[in-house]
Amino acid sequence: MSNRWFTLNRFIKPVFLMLFLSLFVQAFAQDNNAKNVRVPKWLMGVTLAPNSYYLSYSLSNNLQSRPRIGYTTGLNIHNVNSRFGLDVGVYYSRNSRCLYMSPVDSTVFRFSSFGLTPLISEGATAVKLIDIFHCFSLPVKITYRLGGDEVRITASAGLVPQLQKLVASKSQIQFQQKPTEKNRGNKLGYASDFGMSALASLNWIYQLNDRLHLGVEPTFSYGFEDILNRPIVEHQIQVVLNMTCYFILR
Image: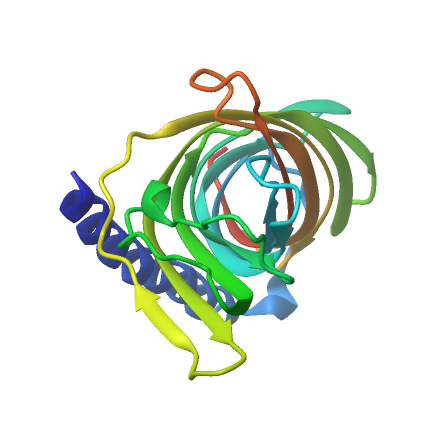
């Protein structure tokens, strides 16, 4: 199963990058001077975006979680004609989180739950662990058009069901009396976790020409991860700057 995830990851990135760049080339190849401003009913978008991802960690009071930078890519259908509209998409994200412990607990500290060789923290002064996740999400948003024709502004709110899979981990353990130990985990085969988030966003959509539009959409989401498998769920926060190239469906 883990090999399929990594194969899919290697396939998705170049495909969406090529789609995104090809739409930009097509957009600027048109004669923008002949552009007629019109409001379409439906747009289909290709998105490529950086994101900042934070996932809490509840198994140790001394192990702190820190946000990490990742990326998001996907497709969405966006209604912009009426005052209220709908935006539905399917997205893939590569997320990661950094877990940091300093000082290290005096108890025996093991990484076995992350698929790494169990390690003992005796004599360690700090521990850093980076988890890497693949995530598929299906955001559904209600949009409200604030105004504008050539540059339209819409506010959105909605829900994001998602499946997230831990695929790799790597660790660094710092000691006072000996060199830092590094350990890179293999591709892990853990079951996917189900999560649910609420999101809010503000989208600026600029008409490049008669067929193509460009959207910039900062998005904030907050939710819960692994809500089906554990009595204590983890909180997740994600900030994404969606950059979307839209083309008109009708």
